[in-house]
Image (cartoon, rainbow, N blue to C red; front, side, top):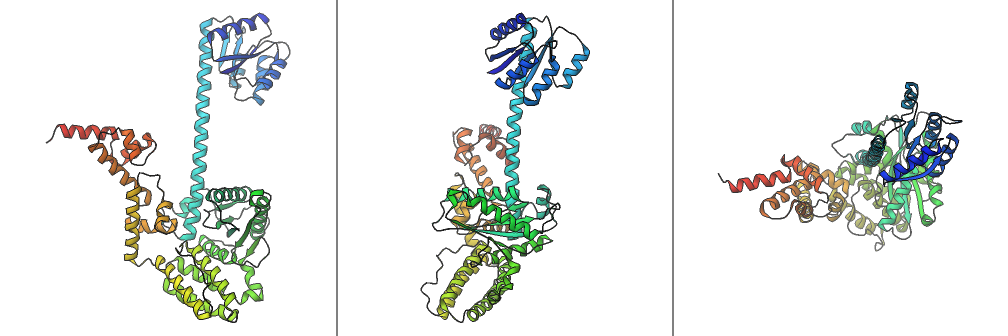
Length: 524
């Protein structure tokens, strides 16, 4: 239903027009009649009409002046000028106001009907255009969000992707000059429900994006990797800028009742002037986020060594350990860990309770930084001596090293066999890379990298190939409709299924079926 306002200073003209419109169009509701421009503006503000018929010559404001005023508050309204004055000057002004419908009085019913139908078509097109723009905006927003998490993941995990960091910089219009890494740690007494965790993550990300120029990665267990980028117009130092950002975000979240029992803390790395330095800044932020004794909102890595007590702990070696693990240098990593263990035993004067607390946090730090999650619950509770603590800790650490050892092809082959088997069994489900990674006890980032290195294609392409092959099999051997086959192989949109199938086979499913039927009926 379209709301229509009639504007004309002649009573008879208004009544006649109302009668004709209501007889000709069931989809029109005449919401009001105005005798002059001032009344027209008031009624437009009250009823928000979709269409306004407008006389030009009226006392006070003329029709064109009235249109100009109404458009200020109602830009989507469509106007039809009905005038007895055939003036090129009026037509020119109407065109400047983007009014394309102009009828000369006296007009007949067919002319009026045709003009109103043109307005209907225009309104329908505008509606479709608005919907399409919203869809495009949503898609762009989704793609931008994916590109952002891809950027963060590529940087911190040294991933090889179809798009390089330079490509992502261009896509996201990032002109990198300097930046620093933040690791936002989120703790709660009781474990998060998945939906609750998702809501919290969105709240933190949205708050950070509103208050600063930063790139926010996916939430991994209980922390969120973030990179704060310098803004040329900011006169404040990047360090102070990052501290203010964290403080404002945490202040915003502290006012939300649902997050009253959630503890927020951030670790920050050094200011970096290259992407390679930014990766080191991330490792530093991870180290800094472990300083649970600090009472402020954000702990800077550069400040760790200013405190004499902190100088006793091997924070620099922790950073080296993480770097070695991230590049797969497990032999060097083990040597660094031996040094760390010796340093900590000396720093804590062989006190087992403090040693166990430190190593428990270190183990969480290692698995967090590498995204390799140990299947067993790590604990040192049953260890009562330094020797027992070391034996238990290194035993669990070596389990992590096994998952990181890229040179162990037998291990990787076994992982891939289990992954492929799971994919083949569940290809018809709403299957994601994260689902498969969880099944084989690997992080999504590590599984994605391993899968691409070992198979030569990414997870999505592999899954799509399986689905297309199964669809071909069903098309040839079954009497199922193409829509049923679409659902059978894991797609929920037949049009999308058809496009994917054609991309791989150069034929649509319908054409493919026809070709196979023809081959069957005409064997060579």
